[in-house]
Amino acid sequence: MNENQMRTVLLIEDDPGDALLIAEMLELQQCRASLVRVERLSEGISYLQQNCCDVVLLDMNLPDSSGLPTMTRLMDAAPTTPIIVLTGLSDESFGVEAVKSGAQDYLVKGDIDGRVLKRAMFYAVERKKLEISLKQTRDLFERQSRIDYLTGIYNRLMFNELLEAELQRARRYGTSLSLIMFDLDHFKQINDNYSHIMGDHVLKELAQLISDNIRAHDIFSRWGGEEFMVLVPKCDQAGTSMLAEKLRSLCEIHDFGNGLQVTASFGIAHFCAEDSAESFTARADEAMYLSKKNGRNRIESL
Image 1 (spheres, rainbow, N blue to C red):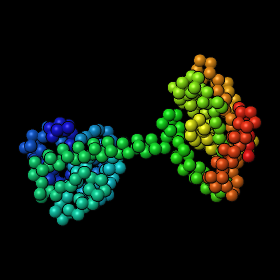
Image 2 (image 1 turned 120 degrees about the vertical axis):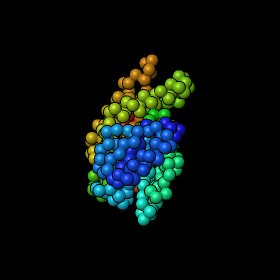
Image 3 (image 1 turned 135 degrees about the vertical axis):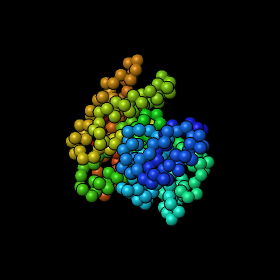
Image 4 (image 1 turned 60 degrees about the vertical axis):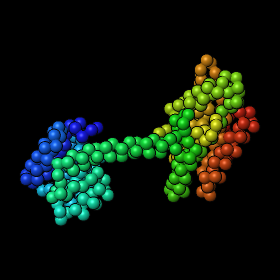
C-alpha cells in the first residue's frame, strides 16, 4: 500500500480544535482517505466492529477512557487494525508505554505536521501487516512442530506433552487412564509390493479411520513409522479393551484401496500410581510386541 491508497482513517478525538487541525493536515497532504471522527472510545469500538479502516488515530484521554487502558481496550476490540496514539506534551510517557503495549507509533500533538502524520500512518499500516504476517508464520511453525506432516494427527513431541498432563491429572484425581499402542502388520510388504506412495496412503487413511472412531477427548498420535498411540482418559479397563477391539476390527475390514486389507497388532497398558511416562509407554509397547509374537491382528494387555 502506498501513501495514497488508504481508504478510511478513524480519528477518535473529543477536542474539535485538534480534530480540525488533523483534518486540515491530511487535506494539505492530499491524503485521499476518508476521515471518520468519533469523540468517545466506545463509539470508536462500535465503528470498528461494523466497519473496516486502515488506521486509527487515538487520543489517549477521552470522555469515557483515559491513559493506557484506552489503547489496550481498542486493541482488544480490533487486534488487526494499526493504532497511532496521539498525546499531549505532558502525556508523552503514555505514548511510549502504548507503543510497548502494541500501538504502532505515537505522535505528540504539538509536534505534528502533515508530512509526519501521513508518513506515520503509512508506516503503521505496513508494520501491522508485517506483524500479522510474522504471527501467522509463527503459528504455522508452531502447528507444524506438533502435527505429523503426513497424517495430520499429533506427532510424538505433542503426544509426550499431553501424556505428561494426563498422567498428572490421573495421579491428582485418581481417575483411570489407559494407553493403546498399535502397529500395522507387515507394513514393509505394502511399501515393497505396492510402493511407498501406497504406504503413505494407508497411513493417512488409517489415521482418518481411527480419528473418526474415538472420543473427542481421546488423544491420538503417530508414534513413529507405522506405530500409533491412543491415550484414553477416564475409561475403565473393560471400556478400553472394547475400544481397542473396535479399532482392530475396523482396521481389519477396511478397504484401503483396490481391495488392500491391512491388520494391526494392539497393546494396552493401564495406568498405575507409580507410572512415569516412560514406564507407561514401555508397558504398552511390550504388550503390543506380545501381540505380534502371539500371531498379530490381536490385542494384548499388561
